[in-house]
Length: 365
Length: 245
Image (tube, rainbow over all chains, first blue to last red; front, side, top):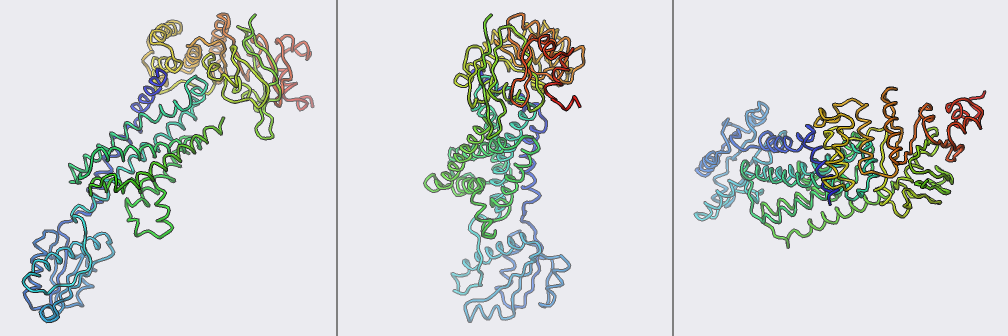
């Protein structure tokens, strides 16, 4: 135990004295949260829209008032005829046009349903998707309110399930946690082990009476502690700065972070058993872990929108399951009975990574 | 004199390649044993087996009275190691390096304190004890690494090209430390590429292609090969006929 303590203490010295490591540990998470939170966040306010109202009735006027009243949209332009629509988009003044056709009011009275057309500028796909769903939501509300007076409705097909305003926060906070934990656990661990290989100190350690398992556990414990601290930092930022809800159990959340961190650490060890230099370790972590996590875990692109082969790959990325866990626990308040599946997948993955690492270590003997 | 290293028909195969081919020798307590050979001759493999890092394919060896194959942990507790590939932690201070090595060899806090005091006064490190290792000169680092290899009072210390890259004066000082340790009864097992250093050893073995081709005191070897320097002995054996043409 004394040997182990000496080892862990040495690891902390390495971490606290390396500026790069410290930056990754403390500056990167905050930078990522802020970047994703403010810069990439589809901040939904004052979206410029155009209105083309050929209907002469009250309903369309009421609906327009309602839309402006929501605070999300600003009427930038009032159009006269459908031919003006392309021009409005080309000038870039509006992101979306709401088109009430001439027979809107009549349809609503006689056919009991009427079409309103939402035309969105799809070159900015995120805004297009978000504005149309917001508007659908508003129109849907409008329908229910007026539905009591007369059974007429305005046709809308899309709707959002969760609180629309916070959509991007929901997506990015779990993603950032997944990414940060991966960087700290897998990248830093593989680099620190590779560094001992490079400088020859690993040779010295292996000749000393400290066992190889102790070396590895001693290596990962500081990173495990720091990773968990970091995930709480990000979650707190998410809750207090970006208004992320915390509905579920804190204990489950901690457990999820712990399991995912151990999975990442074992990946880091696996990488370091296969590489000889720090650069190789860094490259392997970036290409084989960070890129897939960024692109295929559902962090940036929704998994459903990926082509099938990539969807299959996303299933073998630990972050995919971790993001599901975090979202289920924090936002939906899911208990263990609902999320045992991603949990068991993560645990099974960890077991496989550890077994393969042990095999690789033994082969070197 | 007590025999500290006993090697009998020690063999290591990697697939069909025989790195070390049935080598046998013995080393006595306090002896300085030179282990020479060209790169790839099997020196490193032999050293790794003797330090419990590699399991022999066949044959046996004991170090400090423990079998390297079955009692590797006890062997490790009783040997020290230092390599040319510099082995202190550069981002730790001298004191922290001492504490760390003392710690992983399981020394008590008091033992670490006493021995670190000894090291500091012996090398006059008082002024730099709290400086990071990367800021001190290479010669000092190497002496310190040697002192750390001895911190747990091992019976045998393996020195793998310990003097690579240092100036002749520092090398001479380093050899003084080696003699001092040997006089204290520590067995020194050293590899080197400097043939003048081979002359300083009590006995020398020369490995070629996995076999020990020569073994004896430097003067015995020079006599039997009828040359006047260890360098010439080495050239004759390691380079073979290529040199004679």
